[in-house]
Amino acid sequence: MDKKFDERVTIIARNGSTWTEPAVMDGGTSEMLRGDVISGDRYWSREFMQKEWDHMWSRVWHIGARVAELMEPGDYVVHNFMQESVLLVRQDDDSIRAFYNVCPHRGNRLVWGDAGGMKKFSCAYHGWEFSKNGQLQHAPDPENFRKGSPCGKVTLVELKCEVWGGFVWYNMDPEAKSLLEYLDPLPKHFANRELDKMKRIVWRKVDVNCNWKFASDNFNESYHVRIVHPTMGVYVVEDYSGHTFEMYANGHNRALELGQPSSRFITQNDYWESLLKAWKLDPAVYAGCAAEARLALQAQKRKLGPARGHEYMAKLTDDELTDFFHYTAFPNLTITGTPMDGAVHIFRTEPHPTDPEKCTFEYWGLYPEIKGAETIPTVSGPRPWEEAEPEILTYGIDEVGDFIDEDLSVAVNQQKGLHSRGYRDAILSEQEARVRRFHEVLNDYIADRR
Image (cartoon, rainbow, N blue to C red; front, side, top):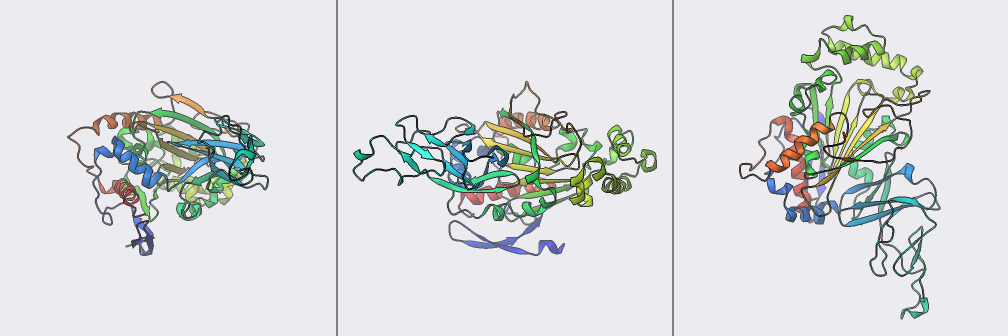
């Protein structure tokens, strides 16, 4: 067995128990898993939805904003998540702080806009005014309070707030581990890409009639690719034997996918031929030799990339120049580093506030700068290299883009099937072990074992 699977870490549970498990597990086998049942009710039960909120959502790190949205003191972004609303504010000392978006006087929602800039935040009910740092500055009739004026004493309730990857994150659990510790090993694995220097130039949102966990399930396996995405094999190996799967102690997972055509697309592959030609390689030389072409492509990108404006390539490894580094960050993020102009694709799926059979799916396209280019080629067409505004889409009418619509159509149909008495538990192949692992980590949270 690979020695990287030998290291063990200690898990300290919320209920006081402790145990050890491998820091990294082979994600291509279920040997190390318990085999927890993945029942249909966890996708539609309101009782299970409440358990997720009580034990998991209120304790994990959430992305609340882009750092680029909070450039000046007083800039704010509101992130609404289920029944909570969080206010993220840039401070005078250049830090960013997070507060519950509620007036502590009588519980009125404090800020109703999505984003903006303010010197102070005023409650529309009784006129209480709070400074950027959350302290109460003004309240009408301060002399009328039995314990004296509340000004300077009352503050908005603050949450943990940290920054990584160009995003602002918050956590509702005051005892939560640090963001970097929670995300480990993703920050180390994405260090070469310098996410904080990228821009989110594509931002799409769509409401979908399915449970939020469809994304975690779907993007934790590639078993479906040949059926649901029959053309994906033109640029990535589909067969599981060409992938490396890993599962991490924090609940995150990874799949490393070779950026070369699948065996059934080695010939008559227009995409692959045009890619080789674009990097001054003769497709005829590599006919039927995808592995050799991949290595040659790495060398050419290393040689020609920086001079073509792809300066970011100088910091990437050879494999990062051609392959796909696909991560699922527990519980609801998918982060994929790609060789396509250095793009990083992020999917976020958030539950509906009250209906377990609905969710909001978001696609974010992060891209590094290409020096001298007026636009950046993306899966949604050419875009200027600037932070995008959200595009609110309608499922079934608008296209989210690339292969995402194919995944969403499966999710909507699956949501109906999960109600059937004919479904009792997932019958998983070994390459789908990461799906079971996700649900076991979720069960750990619900049982306060994490």
